[in-house]
Length: 280
Image (cartoon, rainbow, N blue to C red; front, side, top):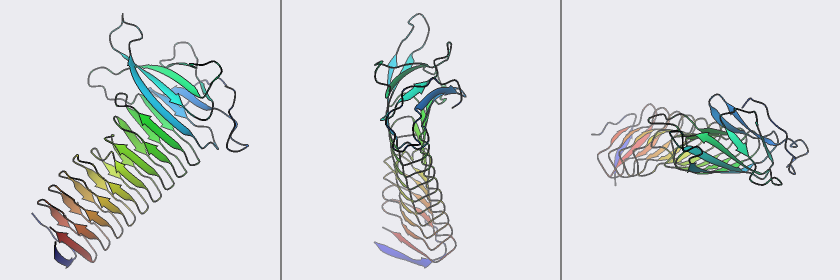
C-alpha cells in the first residue's frame, strides 16, 4: 500500500380505538398497559407501551383471504414478551386476531398486499422508550422500524427501513431498504444499498456487496464500504473511511480524516482538515 500524502484534498481517477387486553408482567410498575396494534395513516402500526423493554419478532406469510377478489394478502404475526391489544372496529382494513384466546402476546393481522408497483409501507413498528429488540423475518411486506429512545437492537432483511432513534443502537439490516442511526454511537451493518446515515454520534457503518451509499454524518465515524462501487461521505468529524473493493467515491468532508481506497479505481477527497489518503 502506498501513502499518497497528508493533504487537505486529493482527487484520484398509531391512533384508533384500542381494546384493552390483560397486561403481562411489566419491566417496571409503570409499564402496565399492553402494546397496541392500530391501523393509522394507511398502515398497520405496532406501538409499544411506555416503560417496556420489548422483545418483538415479526413474520409475514402471503395468503389469499378471499379467492373471489383479485390480489393476495399479508398475514403478519407479531410476537412479544408483553400482551398486545388491537383495534377490533368493524370494517378496519387490518383484521387482527389472537391465535390463542389465552395468550395475548401473539397477534395475527391480515392486510391487503399492494398491487403492481405500489411500494407503500404495509406495517410500521414503534418501540418507544427503553432498550428494545425487534427482529423482522420477512422478505415480502414493506416495513419501517422506529427504535425510539434507548439502546435498541434491530434485525431484519428484505423490504425494511430502520430508524434507530436516540441511544446507542445496533442495526443489522441485511439487504433492507436503508437505515438511520439517530443520535448516539450506532453500529449499522447492511441495509445501505439504498442509503445509510449514521447521524449524530461516533458511528460504525459496514456495507454489503451491493452498491452502497453511506454517510457517517456528525461525529468521528468508521465506514467500511463493501465490495461494489460505493459512495462514502464521512461528514463532520475525524473519520476513517475504507473503500474496500470496487471503484469507490469517498469524501472525508470536514475534520482530520483517514481514507483507504482499497482495490479498484477510486476517487478520494479528504476535504478541509489535515487528512491522510491511501490507495492500493
